[in-house]
Image 1 (spheres, rainbow, N blue to C red):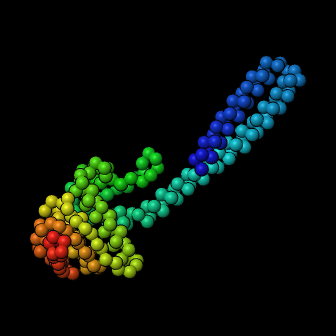
Image 2: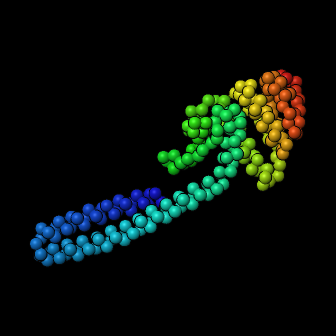
Image 3: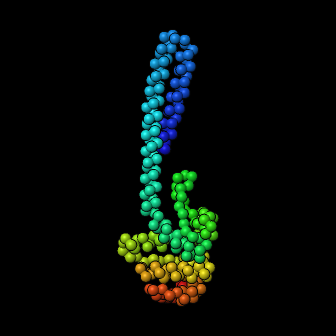
Length: 219
């Protein structure tokens, strides 16, 4: 649709220029027969320009309406998940972020932003590796919870998802996973003894069970 609008815009501008050229020719002919012919041609160009302009406007209005419908649909279906992910993100980052926000970029595509307590917005690519991992986990858990409300339970399996968390955020992550385990099975694989130690302090409703895989080096 964007290409069609651009093409119609170019045609409109071309017809307008041609009409001006003919009007200049009419003025130079000083009422001769050629002037009458030129005047008729000018009217034809004018009629074409009006028709093209009307089509251009219809397409532009349709594009705006379609864009609004797409945005409404996106917000209706993504906002609950985004809000939940924002709450989880706040917990996992220990209030370093207070939530998430989505906006449309210059290219019209949605972008995700982290929101600081002072309402400062941070692009995902400007977050630390650990914070991005916490964001990823928040989004996955929010999407999983939505699925669980609408579909069959499914296990949540993660491998060393807490590897870039410090101890305090690892503890927060384990507590969140323990809460999720009340509704579906959660399997967390890790190479790190510290994660196992911290898991022992988690008082989850579903309980925390550990199993060491000696064949993979104590994993």
